[in-house]
Amino acid sequence: MKNEKKRELYWTWLSYEGWNLYMAATSRGLCFVGSQDQPWDELAQWASQRFPGSTLVRDDERLQPYVAPLIEYLRGERESFDIALDVHGTPFQLAVWEALCQIPFGQTRTYSEIATQIQRPAAVRAVGAAIGANPVLIAVPCHRVIGKNGALTGYRGGMEMKEVLLQIEQVETRAQRRPLRA
Image (cartoon, rainbow, N blue to C red; front, side, top):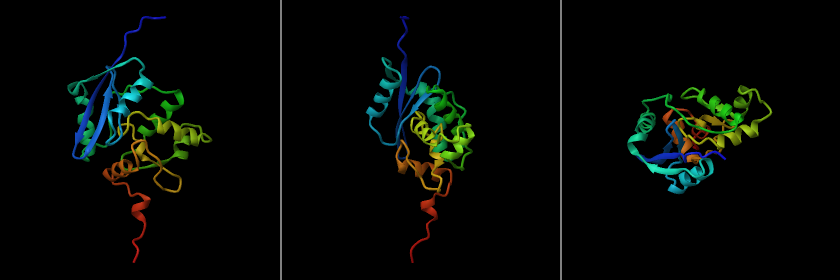
C-alpha cells in the first residue's frame, strides 16, 4: 500500500445578500459548492464520502478566487465560470457535468437533450442521477436542466434555490408562465 499524504480540503462560508452556503477546494480547484442554508453536515458528509481521511481546513483567503466569481454571478455580473475545478466522478458523470457547463447562460436543456448530447440517448435516468451527484452547484450549472414538459424538476440545492438561480439568468419558468386567475 502506498504511503499517501492525506488531502486537505479548504473551505469557506459564502454569505452574501441572503445567500449562505459552504464551499470547498483542494489545491487543484473548487470541488464543492453546497446548497443554500444547509448546515456544516452537508459539507462534512460529502467530504467524508468523496475524500475519506481528508482534513477540512477553513481558509477564506484561499477560497477567495472561487467566492468572488460566484458573488459576481449572484449579482448578475457573470454568465460563465473559468475557474479551476477538481471534480471526481465516473467517466459518465464527468461527461454529463461537462455537458452542463456547455449550456449557455439564460438557457435550459432537458435531461433527454443532455443524454443525446453525450451520445447516450437511452440513459435519461442515469443523466438525472449524474446531475444529482454534481458536487459544484452554480459553477457546474445543473440548475439549467428542466423536465421534458418544461417543468422544474429536482435539485440538490432545493427547488427554491433552483428557481432563484434561473431568475438571476432571467429564464422564464413554467410556473411564471401560468396565466393569473381572474
